[in-house]
Length: 427
Length: 167
Image (tube, rainbow over all chains, first blue to last red; front, side, top):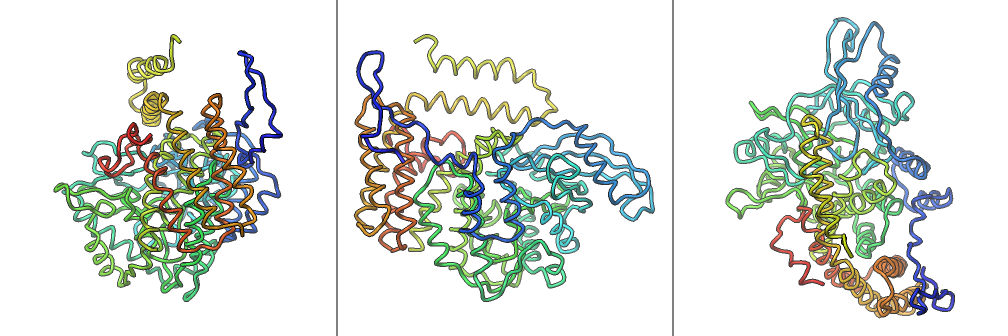
């Protein structure tokens, strides 16, 4: 707080006039050097899933540590070699290591692996991707969960084969996983570059109709995971039918991130949080929620327009399917069709057709009231990430993409406007 | 004041665009993207720097209006109300002080906004409080949308008034 006038010292300026010394730094930056007590209070007030508690606590305990410094490909190859050796017999060699771009969150290195294959039975060369966290990421998540989920989804939807995980950064500079390189593109190669992070992606009229069907078909599949798949997800808290606990934990995840990372308060965020707690619906079906479900987060082959790999599962959790629908329908992921009038959800279909197509593929009903609830949650989550964490990681020079995440922070007012209009609609 | 901020930013942008960009390895897509964002960031700063003080003053006035209305709705029941009223007075005095610089106004505004949030956090969520905060947040949100319009994130740019009209 600014203290009152009586405690302020007036400093004479060069002109001889007295100048009131206004404090120039807000007290809120305790977040840059958090104390154990500060961390403990937040953990206690906003309980989240066990694995996410571990990840977020680790982030805060390292907050005052060093920022990101460039990491060489040589260092990553050394770490990846050590990690692969833990479970690979026979000779192997990493070749042609190179950086991959895309996304604002993780470091990615592509390489070729000469080895005897996962079953140690045939000499082969496999294209691989190492996905590693920077010291702090614009979304702080669990490589253990991501690895576990990708493995569990094999056979449900197209995912890259996951091979190795280093969940605590024992072999690599930071937590990482290695998965197989999937063929395909995130956008038609004939299209110009889109905004950073895929926002504003337009597939165009040639690809859009088929990709829309494949996209919603696959979403329906992972929203109906089956008990055998769920049983493989030991790093995820279970979700109980008839309870709002899974959703409340999700709300608290983003409130906790907001508490840990923000530079400034926003009154609308306090209102939104209260509203989300008071209106959380009971779960009617347990889905794998992708968490960043939208165009741009899957690869497809241009010749047949088939989805070859779903990417970026780091925000996934077990909960309500409506979150993925609401996320994919956020304003930032919509655009108008070529007629200039028809608004396309996630760049695919008009709203009613989008939801009807989803219902047909998934066999699950879309509840408009729940959809509105998750529109609020998606806005809340987005502001926490873009206004809270994007600022914090760039302030601490924590990533290889500080300028990208700072650019991303400029979307906040657009997101707040969506939150504001949603709150008006649900009032 | 020569060179002034505008000229310094102009030449920095020109150097990056005309001399540095052609020298970047075409195969290094990370460097290419970050260079474009660096140029874009400097361009936004160049266009907004002359307006920054007016912008912060308008946001500060928005915060005062919100704080006063929240105080009316929540009343004296809140344990945090006196801290918010102190922050309100500090904000008004900072705005009235011609010597207060932009960073100091921002600091006072952040303190006031934090105090408002503490009051909201401690209060029950009523329809009246929700409607008030939603309504009173509109001006600041629209100013910020206009301020960052060059980022390209606004789905319909025509829905946002020019920043010069909003400050």
